[in-house]
Length: 185
Image 1 (tube, rainbow, N blue to C red):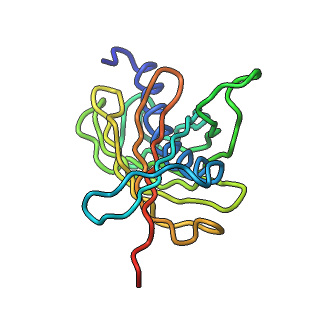
Image 2: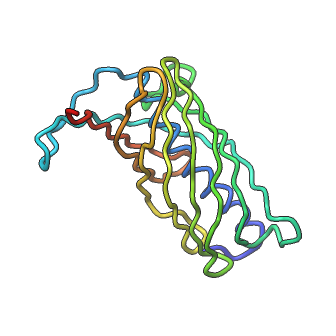
């Protein structure tokens, strides 16, 4: 639980960045791992490709003009600018495989430590990009695990469909990307 304004600002920054990072990490991992093993989708009998990446946050908070920057306010935005990495460390740390860019805008503030943010982020990858969007919930100053919808892409990911699950851990976020094959048209 957050007990001081300085902790709240830090938690807000982490929360907003995590959402956007999740989206971007998913896209970057897809580019790096082009042939990941899949598991059957029990509802449609299709193969779902699952990819996991780490996101290291570098975002910044932009409070609404005229509001207290130490408490959540409707309209506050978190600028997403994260490095996406592979999940296996090398000699020099985790290899960077891409980056993301986007924003998370607080649309509902329940109290100074709880709210909902709409996040939209795009992951830049060597073979294209992936974009994801969804709602992230912050509760008692911490983000809850969230699922974002993959809404599109470019290049090799032009017709991408699926979800990005964002989970927080110490020092970084874990993004689990599930790409579904397109249904026959």
